[in-house]
Length: 219
Image 1 (cartoon, helix red, strand yellow):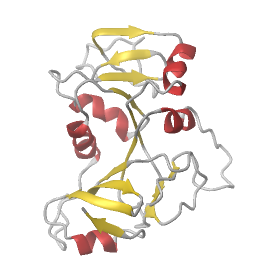
Image 2: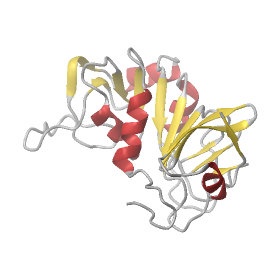
Image 3: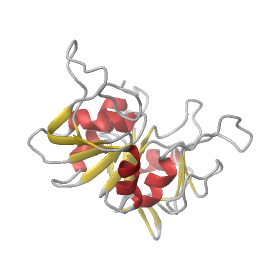
Image 4: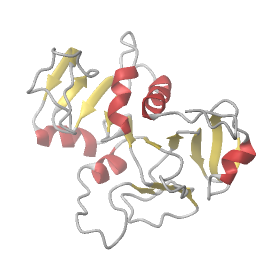
């Protein structure tokens, strides 16, 4: 939806996923986390050879199936129905995590609650007092993949910043994030902090900074 007062349109979840897919190179082995990242598989061009890994034991996962063509036994780690690309395979859960922990993934795309300018990631608990604080496989993926990209809304539902000098939520991993995709921008995490690579049309650098607690730098 276009922000009529500001003259720009934030990306929706599908738009964010498509923007991430645009940047994944040919030949990479990629894990897609829960939430927005699962949509990325739907936007990888079929002619581009990207091998998508799912920690529940799929190597070569494809996009979501067409309606009425679902295989009820073929699901990703979020228990969503998926497809298998030609040449895809199934592996034991332990072997799947051996791929993660052995550094064999070129990229992991994760959702996030907060990312710090140092690359710290918080994506599994809202606070230290939260009762159901299951971290799942995110910790393994955050430290096991060669690169970690995070995709998330730029701010919370109540307008609080997600890109911060320091995370206030419990960390999944420290210094693991190399790039962030939000509904407004694409940023690299560098030694000097967040460097803006791209912004949605109509959004100024100053307006983006006003919505971001961490200091931003121009490319």
